Image 1 (spheres, rainbow, N blue to C red):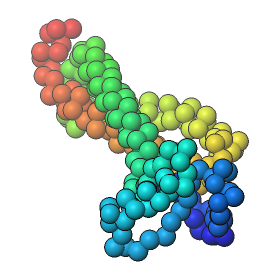
Image 2: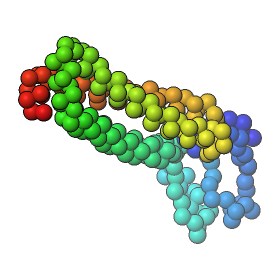
Image 3: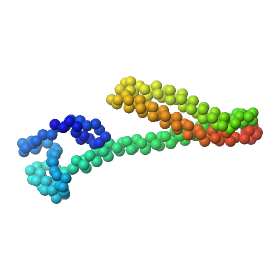
Length: 205
């Protein structure tokens, strides 16, 4: 009996496992045999083991795999879906950032008359830029209130059997990331709005 066996890679929790000694009467009921060897066991030793097992189990397909190789394979199988999801997430984040940037740019172009009027009556450029950034953050806050309401249902309903602390941490990090993303995407349009010349904007209006 082993209490802390990790037979599914380094990214899964350890659990209990059972290894049984076998003899020739059990060969028809097993598909894996674990052999303890010294660290100096080389390919020649594996060849001798292969010949010995193949001589006993003549109708079986024999394959030799070290625990270190099996662990690496398990780790790669576990990380592959994560890497794919990270790539998809990065692609979606870039699309969202471009969408926010485009909406703000379009909004500034439509409000050039308003911005020019504010600049004409003495509003500093920092005030105009701050207004654009503040409006973006307020809209993001309204969206996050709705999104957080649905996201908080996952720890309440214990979906996917994940600890509530994991959900809470993920929600908090997501909120911080969205605020940072909106802030970064609104800084440059806000700077462009602050650079609008009052005479040009009012003339175009």
